Every structure is written in C-alpha cells, then in structure tokens.
Length: 114
Length: 118
Image 1 (cartoon, rainbow over the protein chains, first blue to last red):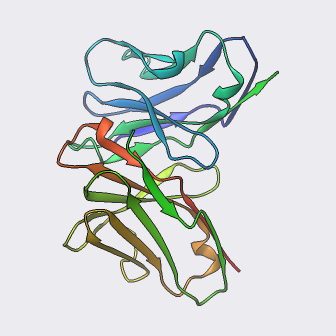
Image 2 (cartoon, rainbow over the protein chains, first blue to last red; image 1 turned 30 degrees about the vertical axis):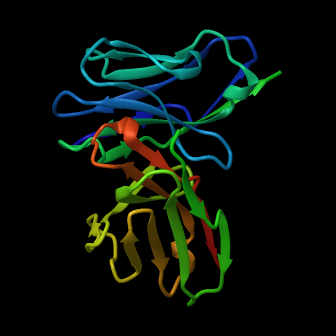
Image 3 (tube, rainbow over the protein chains, first blue to last red; image 1 turned 135 degrees about the horizontal axis):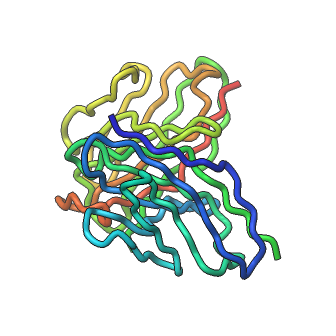
C-alpha cells in the first residue's frame, strides 16, 4: 500500500524567508510523487512532479523538491516566500500503475506574514 | 491552462434532500473524471472514477446508491448526494482528464464544493 504523511498541518513564515513543507511517503515500489497547491476558491494546481528521473525537481513559482529514497521524503522548499504563496499544499503519491489513482496527504496550510 | 468548473462552490441543505454537484471541463474533452471527498484536516479520498457513457467505478466503501455519478457528455459529470444526512457534510472535489493522456499534467481539478447538511 502507498501513503503520504505531511508532518505539519500549518506552517507560518515571514515574507522573504525560506519555506519548508515536509512530506514522507510509503511505497512498496518506486513511487511517482507530486506536490499540488490550492489557493482559495481555486482548483488544485500541479506544482511539480518526480517520476524517477532527477531527484531534485524544480517546479513553478520557484518551488523545488528533493526525492530522498533513504529518508522516504519529498520535502517542498522555496528560498524566499512571497505573500502570494499563502495556500494549501498537498503532497501526493500515485497509486498502482495509474498516474490518476492519486493518494493525497492531509495538506499543509502555508501562512506568509508580511 | 485548462479549466474545470465545479458548481456550486457551497451548498447548504436539509437532511433527507438530494444535492447535485456539477463538474465541467470548459476547454477540453474529458473522457474520464474523478470525484474526491475531503474531511476536515484529512486528505482527499478518491470516491469514484467516471467514464463518459458508462457506469462509474466506485472505490471500496463508497455507497454507489448514495453517491450517484453521471457522465453523460465529454464535458460534464455530476455527483448527486441522495437523501443527504449530516455525516455527508464534506468538501467534494472533481478532476478531469484531458483527452486520452495519462500524464498527470493532463489532469485538472475543480475548485471544490463545500456541502453542509443540517
């Protein structure tokens, strides 16, 4: 079985400081991992994906994530937070052989203080 | 990018009534759509997969007679919560696959519907 655990339900940072959203996964085989972002009243948007190529994945809006098999982690980072980054972030693993059987983490709400 | 429109965004209904939620792909054809449910502080759980012109496939534990899914056209899928009860109160999200691609980049999400049953 596959699962993801997002370790923090809320993360608060000041504008201009680094962002770290943590995600650990469990998978019986090589997983595909994704980060999605959801802004208020908007649909979920794909930020980035890992599918067994480069372990450091760059996404949109300056976000990146590093796949660490030894730590079963896929943490999301950004060097400098912007007010517009305030949103809900979901770490996701694909289940089975279908990229659409997505298994979601419980989400992390990112708050950015001015 | 592609847009998936989900309506209504919020609905409040009385216990025992039925509620219909619509999911539309605005600028692409979606042969497959997915319905998720999210409880507070919980992850999104896949409820069912709907394919245009055929019966939906429900995940284990999801009552198909309670959650009726219809995917009658390539741009519209509906989820009807029948005889709603307070325990059905939740956030429901749909997603739609653009065309025949299995790439995750071709999967687009609606903005969700918050259902509150009194």
